[in-house]
Length: 369
Image (cartoon, rainbow, N blue to C red; front, side, top):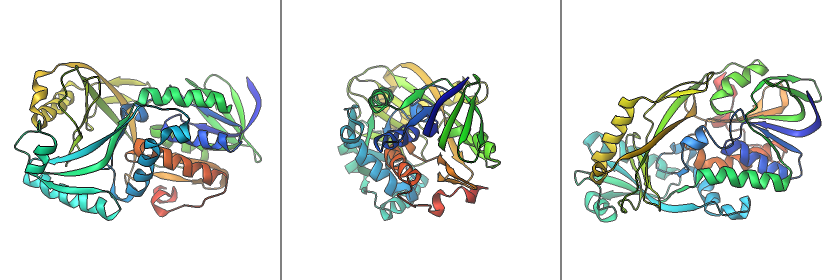
């Protein structure tokens, strides 16, 4: 079935970056369609669980994460509604000599890029967070951390899209894009055909597959991440907790539940859409969490879930035009992308409108081809 509406822009992928890009394009008056093979703000934008972090952002991306964090803290201004954003300090812990060396090295690199991180002693660390294992050697402290209610974020985006006239289509897998010269034909698995003047690929782990529609071959790794939710308990964490090697992240919500992650992978076939949890990795994640915060040993796991994150071969992002297709664009694979998402989505909207040229080598598609 052919959709007779011709859109100014169609965005494929309804994660944080796709949603933010769509929001700003619609505000500028462009007729916008946002499509996702699943539900809005799931996969990488769901498995992140709303974590806003400077500590876990690659040094070169710190300026983008800071601007994104600032936008989250003022989300009502650009998103139109409160979405339960919590500002919480972050502590990145070191428990060994190797951790300490790594923490100092990475913190200095982030500080050079503008991150408001301060290296603190064991005594200062335990004063800030008394429930940390007293074997901690030191920590890095950052006021600029926190988290967002990621479930509510998707609902608020959907509400704003209805107000702005953005069409959102969920559970619609796109299988082909054809460049007809003056416009694109977008074909779905359900045999729907959509016309668009401009295209944005924001499909996360599916970018490798999607770029093949334009005869471009790059490698995008699929990182199937697992998350653990702990039952409600008394307040044990005042800070967002990470550790120097990046294998742990924790935050406790106002209702007393604690969320634990850190990149302990599961298995997932991106074609069959089936996620398999790996108990040994869930156990490893919990053991590390309990070592860091011994009070967690008394708690029980409520549930676990997983989602997919994308990573390029150099672990750096893409935000660029697609070669030989002036009206086709691609964005994705941003490390700590939930934090920087509002800002890079805004930048993408400006690039599409021809108002900003920021084709930094850091984001170029050509480096990966």
